[in-house]
Image 1 (cartoon, rainbow, N blue to C red):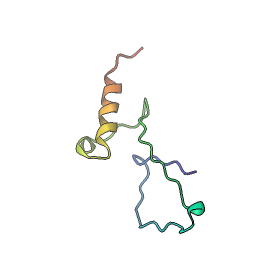
Image 2 (cartoon, rainbow, N blue to C red):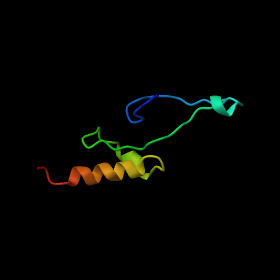
Image 3 (cartoon, rainbow, N blue to C red):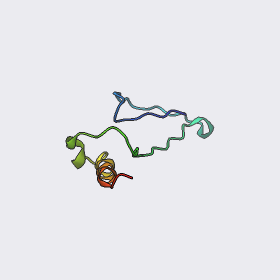
Image 4 (cartoon, helix red, strand yellow):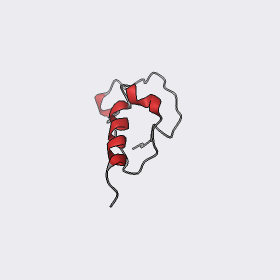
Length: 67
């Protein structure tokens, strides 16, 4: 299992070659999680397909009254 935070980890992408054998293929599940007190995202992210939902959730969380 690999867990990474795309907001803090710089990485590149390459084409993935999967196995022909279905029993050896990878099972990938991508989760877009928002940490309650996570690192703020730059304003440039608010209009991107990947980051807009997270950006908006963070904004709503930060606007909640503090207990």
